Length: 151
Length: 99
Image: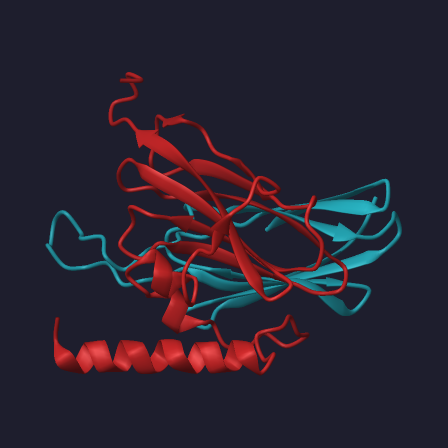
């Protein structure tokens, strides 16, 4: 890795973490800065801003076990059983930049998020939930079959 | 953009379908061998009655023509405004009334 890009990456992610600590990454009425540091991070630890935390059975992660088309893989993260949820994120472990989407909840937000992701190759899909200052996750393996023969 | 917002038991199901290429920036054009520049939605803001309820930050790894489904506390008759912005500065917004 080039030293320059590495330094830039760490600087960006530390800036994001300080922003999170200061409560700047809360939902707001004006479209604001896109969290580039965690979005371009190359591993799960970087993309979650310090690790995926402990596994939790309260997070319901709904993904297909076999995806016939890796370009459109439906994902559903339901953490309505948890209280004090601040954000819900969807990560694809096998992608170059694992973080696919992160949903920051306001007062009226419900801990639920669903979308469709591109998944390059078979690997784990991770749903990460931040609640009460702690991080929890649930993960499930997805097999991407090219050609759609279900193997 | 197509939006469906339906209330049930104090919770509104908000389903949005965007028309967007969601180009990651790492794909190559087969003919020229050049990289296709990134072009994807970065931010979607869901506002209920003028107050931010959910902010979604997306990456290029969300599928083309993304479908985003969130839930917001609310009832029929509430106003929902959905605004989005992509990495090229393009943006859009739509306002719907919850059914």
